[in-house]
Length: 123
Image (cartoon, rainbow, N blue to C red; front, side, top):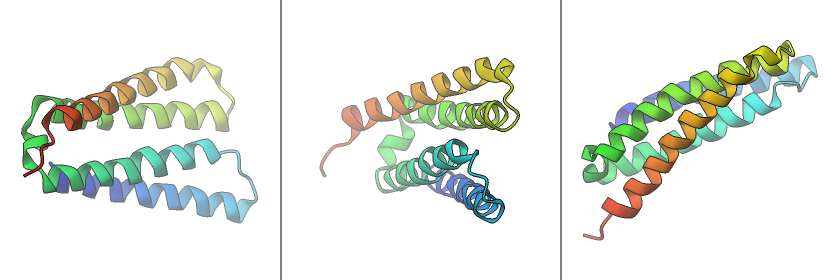
């Protein structure tokens, strides 16, 4: 699971850089919230979680690790799609998608924190 998360995070990194490059080239920074969240929750958080899951396989094997993996990877795309359209085309009809994605992602992150606190042990 750790290596898979790191590979997924590298895709988020490319997307975050592409959005940043677009904003810089166009001098249009409306997508800053999308750029920041993709880089923080997609690239950074998933990379760090992937490293922890790789270094400590017991974290990856736990139910809370699996819950984190799926909730984070389902919630984050929903949240980013919702945020993208809410910001870019100012369509507030997609706020429920944004809120749902944010809730699912948050639940995944809380599962990760629970997993680390419960299952990470010094060797």
